[in-house]
Amino acid sequence: MIDLTETKRVRRDLDIDNVKRVYGCYVCAGQIVARMSIPVLDLSNEEKEMYTKLFRKCISGRQDKNLLEIEMRESDQQKTLYALAGAELESDEMREALYEQIIENLTIDKNYCIILMADNYDIVSYDGDEDFMEKDGSTFNYFICGICPIKESKAELRYAPEQEEFRMNATGSVMANPMLGFMYPAYLDGNADIFKALYYTTDESHEELSQALFGVEPPLTAKEQKEDFETNMFEVLREDYNLETAALVYSDLYEAKENEETYTFSELSNVLEKRNVSEEKVTKLREVIREELVPVNLVSKKYEIRTDDTVITTEPENALMIKTREIDGRTYILVPANGGITVNGQDVFPESEDNN
Image (cartoon, rainbow, N blue to C red; front, side, top):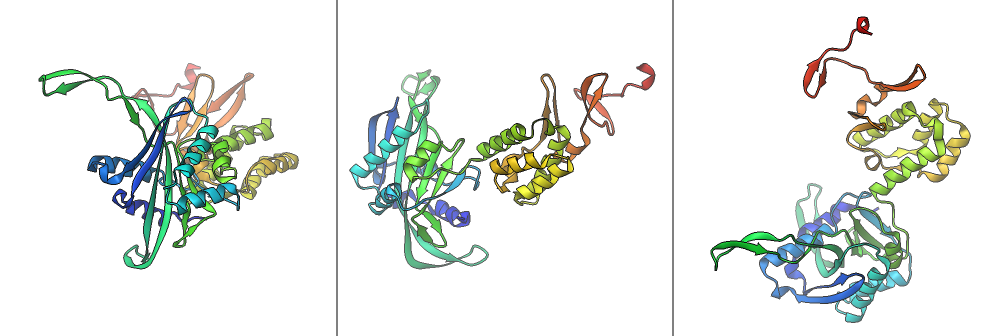
């Protein structure tokens, strides 16, 4: 697995002044309407800062959440990326082929800009306290690709000095932070790993794009892991996945999250056995759920229960206190009323049995 500590150093030391050119293209309705090849020397300091921020964003985030490790095989896609990195993006033909790959395999309902930069990172040694030790004379050569959605700025009243008045002004199309991006090759143990890339996404993994660029399926994003887990638990366990069972599962997940541990399927199956879930269902669940789960991607900060017209939100440690009961043919959710009760911030008393 890639150690992001090293990648964070690359991101921190990314200096746009060391880059020759910023390349890119503007895509509207699936068609390239403009291409960029901007010498960095022609950029203002403000523009350099803006491009630096965008490229750094492409290698930012939490591992297994929105920064995914792509492990490639020897393939046409891997050879293409290797050739691009070796040419430091200077080949018009290879850049054009990359643009076409992205456009043909990315399905989104908005205009976007593809931006590219190639950089050389001086490899240095650090001691255990992250203190700089020395350069070893070698460099890590890589490139970053970002896919940034374009949004139209709103018309606003801006001050016009020549008229000494506030007049309507719209700045046109604006490049937003990247929604997708990648760095190739990945940086591992002080060297370039030409069979790995870091893939950045803010939402979904865009499997078709990953297959086109890297020749492999991408790992699931945090959002996809959560949706996949929830769907499989419900579809396989059905009536056995009741509130009490869910509370036990999520209590275990919250505890593993707090301890920064993974959560194995064996631990999950132990919980399900306590709830008398059949061996057949546990076996079926094993076929669709990964052996190692990442708790931080599966749970929210709060434990939330929803019905058609009610929402109950509490701290994760209180999950096991909430029960369901059948009373006079109706299902009720019971929440212990420990301490005082407030309604819209107003203290109230519980209803006494004499009033029932």
